[in-house]
Image 1 (cartoon, rainbow, N blue to C red):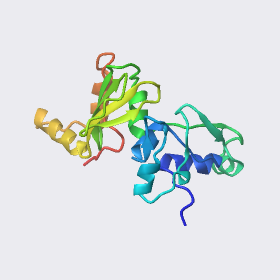
Image 2: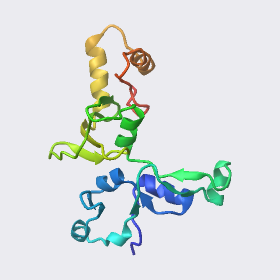
Image 3: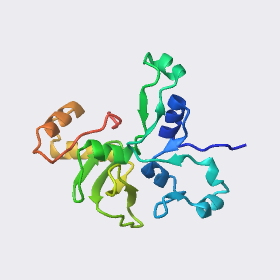
Image 4: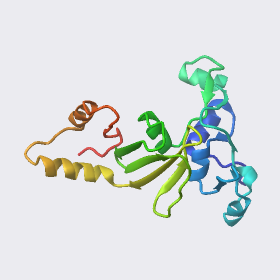
Length: 193
């Protein structure tokens, strides 16, 4: 019988701390969260034949969800009691780590999946876009994406320079020399042939 439902990062948090916690962007990605009310939607849970009580508490991305349990500390060779922070959904975390901090900031992500990420000062849902609360409230992330970006990156590399095969390391090196406030990189999970 189902007792609890956790998303992948939240299950790791549970194993590390014993706490069942998620963040607003991950909760939103479940499609069971009512963002306007900042609570699990009993209506959506009912449609999925789930009880809202199965789902984790929702806390901000920067909230401490607990401390490292002794068994986890021993397994990783760390001290007991190290604070563990909630974190965020992969897309919002990647965008945050690309140093996007204010509405109007934009990033183009080229990896195994790709996307255009734009920060807004309020949610503007669109049926063809994905919208998440950003780790820095009250900002929102809206993204358009594809799940087959690595093949597109390979195609553009060959189209621009068919006589020379540029490695992903060279691609990253070129992007690191781009102007400030621009960012391009290939993600480590990008397909490499």
